[in-house]
Image 1 (cartoon, rainbow over the protein chains, first blue to last red):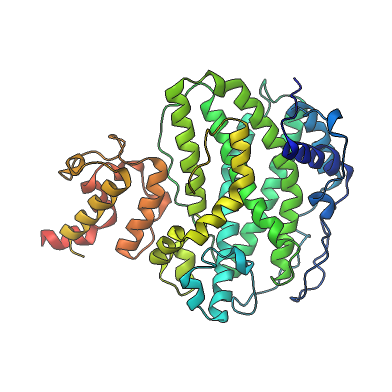
Image 2 (image 1 turned 180 degrees about the horizontal axis):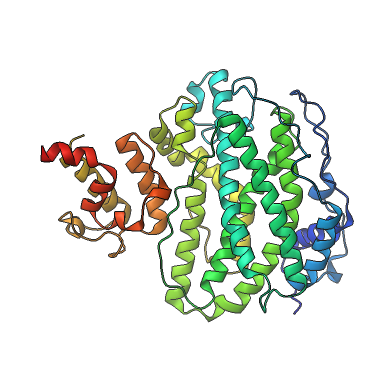
Length: 347
Length: 88
């Protein structure tokens, strides 16, 4: 099945995903380079961020089945070894520099942020990067298990399963990388607090919901990766982890967006009004809940702040709400375009 | 907080979150999840609130969904010391 393009944003995405990534323009960096903070790096990955122009009238959207072999090829050419890709310093001093980019720290712009000294802000930025890596790790864990359960099925057999092997391999390496950072430098991974309660699903809803969860964790993660991967005010190890992650995730996002679009086309239109509302309410709430993970009382406590009060204040602050809406725009636009949401949720 | 205050804090949080009338939790055996007062995603937020009340993290791997059945089961699971004090 070929689907007509629906707008300039889709054109850009397809340019990125279909034309640019498999051509091997960006390679996973094999060495860390300078280990000191400094001025911003040149945008090594501009090739990813700024796709070359293509004649729009000739573009059609590739199906997941058409994308899969090209993504497999790209994964094979960009293969990297998580055990040799990083030089891990013995320890990191939480107050020696920036870890999470200051403007990405969850309370940035709030009164609480203004009252902190620079040393306190740096300490918080350290625990926030540990929290961010924990969030992605715990998002990728069920993703790997869910993808494994979907391999070698009728819908995924052949080229798609072949690509899923790479998808899972790369996600597994990401978890090793994030786990190593968190355990080595913070002595822990912040646990997730999600509790899965059984509920009834409409036909195909559980499948659509699974790939929505995948997309949410990857899109939110990638928003942060893109902001940090070339920045030299943050620790170079953190920048590199973000960069390595982004390079793989660009392929995963391309596949996931198209695969979910096809699932939505197949199932969501068959749901009745109540089922559609139930799904849309869940999706909006799930997205809000994921954002809640960025305001972790445990991380605030480790940074010397009042944990729960800081979370409540930051989540209710208009500056933070605006940040969440901006950071989610691409994701929400996609859900609106695919009709998985009927209106943008309050975040 | 003593046991009575803890029960009241839990009740208020659930009612505010669910926008349910007070009658929905007029006693501490009334079901929370079965009546749809909280969803699984509300529970995430609720756990953080409970952690703040008891000033200690909740080990999510050590609890079963049944602990969220009603306020009595919440007290037993998360505030056993407060229950013992009240009994003594």
